[in-house]
Length: 205
Length: 322
Image 1 (cartoon, each protein chain N blue to C red):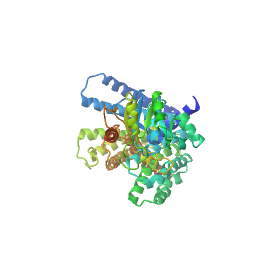
Image 2: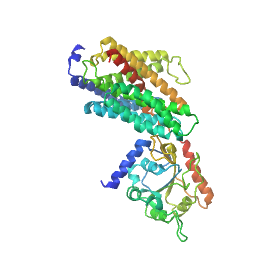
Image 3: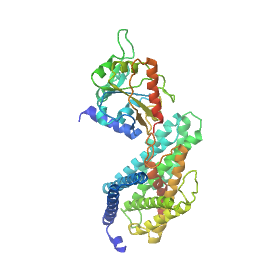
Image 4: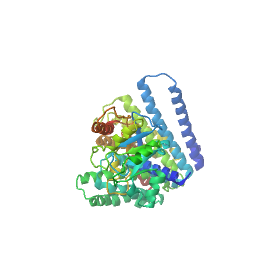
C-alpha cells in the first residue's frame, strides 16, 4: 500500500471515529457511475464527511474542489489535496479570458465524479443559502452525469467556525434521488429545485 | 458447586466461556432454524429485533473473551473505547452550543483518558473523587470561558451528566477487574462477567415480564412498560443468576444473591432513566432503528451497566472493607 492510500484510510477511520460518518442512501444506491454530488456547506469538515461516508471503491473516483491559493500554500496541504483526495483545483481570482468552471469540466470529461457545495461559502444558518450558477452550467454541459443531492446533518456541532479540534459528535450524510435538468428549464428554477431537493433530505429518516 | 470452586482460575474462566459460547451457539442455531418457517410480518419484525439483540450479545461475548485473553490492560482500553463511543452518542443527543466546544474537548480528550489511566494504575481513591469533585468544578469554569450565558446551568449539567454516566459509571467495570480482593487475586474478570451477566438477565427478564404482565406503568410519559412488579421480577431473576454464579465470586452464597439483586435492580433503573433522557432529547425510535445521525443503539445497551457498575463496585468494597 502506498503512503497516500494509507493516509486516506487513516483519515477515513478518524472521520468515522469522530463523527460516525453514516451514509444513508435514499433514491439511488451507491454505484460507481459518474456523478456530481451537491450538498449543503457548513464546515471545513463537510468534504471529509461525505468522502468517508462513501464506500471505499467510490472514494477513489470522487473528487473535491479545492481553492488553489489556499490548498497549495503549504507542502502538507498541497500533498493531502493532490495525493490523498485527488482534488480539482480552481482559482478564486477570475482572469478575464478564463472560465472558472473549466477545471471541473475537464475532470468530468475525464470520467471522474465530483462533490460540490453550490452555496459557494460556508453558511451558519439552518437553511442553506441560494445556490450559485455553477451547478446549472455543469448540468447543461454534462446531461448524462447523475446529479445527486446530499444533506449533511449535525456537522456544524463537530467543528464550529474558528475552532481547530473537532468534538466527537455523530453526523450523517443523506443521499437523495438523482436530479436532471429538464429541457428548456430556467436557470433560477433549476437551482431552486436543486436546493429544495437538498433541504428535503433533512426530514428523511 | 463446591467442586467448581476448587477448579483453578483459568479452568473456571475457561468453563464459563465454554458455557457462554455454547449457550449462544444453541440460541443462534434455534433462531436460524426458525427463519426457515413462514411467518406474519409482526412476528418477522420481532424476530429481526431478536436477531439484532443476539448479534449484540455475540459481539459483547467475543469482546469479553478477547479482554480476558489479552489481559487487564487491553480490557481497560476496550472499556475506554466503549466509553468514548457511548459519550459520543450521549453528546449527540443533547443540545450543546458553540460555547461548549472547549468543555466537550476537555471531556473527550482529557477527562476520559485520564480516568481510565487512573483505573489502570489502581489509584482507587483518586479514581472515586476525580470526576465527581475535580471535573465537576473544572467543566463549568471552562464553559464560562466560552462566553455564552444562555442556558448556562442546563448546558453544564448536561455535559456533567454525560461524563458521570458514560465515563465515570463505565470506568467502574474495568475497576472491578483490577480490584484486589482478599483470596481472589487475578480473578477480576469473573467480577465483570458476574456483573454483566446479572445486569443482562435483569434487563431481559424485566422486559419480558412487562410485556407479558401488562401492568400499570409507573410513569406512562416516560415508559409504557416499566412497572414495579416487572422491576422486582427482573431484580429477583438477577439475584437468582447471581446465586447460581456464586462459585465464581469471592462472595458467600447469600451475599452473592444480594449483590445480584442490587446490581440487576440498579441496572434496570438506569435503563429507565436513559429512556427519560431520550424522551427529553426527542428521540422516539428505539432498539436499533437508527435516527438520522445513527445516534441510537450503543447507549441503550451500556446504560444499565453504567448505572449498575458504580453501585456494585462500592457494594463490593464496602462488603470486604477495603
